[in-house]
Length: 519
Image 1 (cartoon, rainbow, N blue to C red):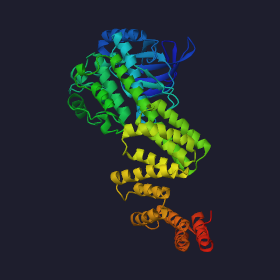
Image 2: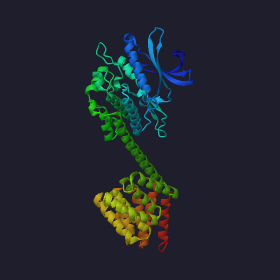
Image 3: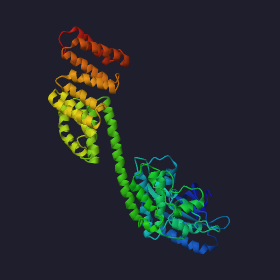
Image 4: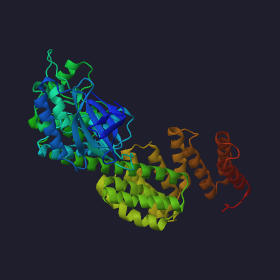
């Protein structure tokens, strides 16, 4: 039909899509000089032409009255084309909308968020609400009849345009007839169960069931009943309860399950009462889903920022962390568990970076809040108090440090176990803050060698500190011997040119040759 002029006005230029109802063409309106879309419907009027013609004309006129709705493709004109067999073929002229359909989104690898799918279906319901108010029931809501305009993943949500309003009501008289074998013809994958029982039913809530089928497919990658056999498919729609979407997509929460299953209720009275109610419910969940997505992205950013900071602290990285902590407080709330957890990590970074004044100020504020929210024995709180004690020791406030670290070591032994690496770490720090470090470090070194292994980095650190403090206590010969043994182990494990190996070798020589303790 390329080049055919319909009604002396609409020239068919190129086909845009094919379906069971007919062919959509990109066409040119020669009278107004504009591009339009023309759908030529395959179904001839047949022997009941007068009644069906009047029905088609009425539906087209009603649908034209929906022009201007942002989620409905505007119908400009309609008519009947006499084909070479002198059979009248209905056609409709619509606005030409650039973009793909939701069918393309269901076929391609998923690039959209759950909130996108919820909002798209909310827009469909907004269009249905306007149509139902005008006594127009679509009866053929499916992904192929939902155009998606301007979607660009995270850059733009896009806008849904519903096509085939009114036309479906006409063609359904043709397509949903009962054949001699009792089969209902139509888009059975998305059809409400009552439509199979009463094919000509015009209940607006049937459209909501179809929206539920579309949403289910967007969220899970397949419709609620993906069956090839027609009669099995009909039986499933009429009798079988659909699986909750979360069984097929574990990232969905229970609220989404509830709404989708409400839309897919077998009894129309158990579905949302009208399209606008469904729209509002979908939009509410979409907003919650977007907020959750923002929270997940923020948590990922924070984790990446902390990882980068551990690999090398700098003022720029610490400022980024500070900004992210502020954003966490804005998104989650200042007293939210996620915010407090991140603040504890941030203040530990400040302490490890030597910014003791700022760290002390934050410790004084954050630790009491964390105590109240998580409890004093929570591992996050104990990690924060451990960092506080280490900072106090580094700031030459040994008595305060020892008190804090001893309490943390006792709590960790009680909560995590006496051989847990974190418990051993607190004992190591507590020993360094004590008045007799070498005695306590000897015990920690032995326990770390037993629990972690003699070649573990933490064991090597404690061995070095033990030898160092032995020398400070006057046992230089023994300290030199232990440093020599440590340097040999480090050369074997790390290499002879590693800085730790060189440090131990240098201390060994100094302890062996210096009468006093070298500063």
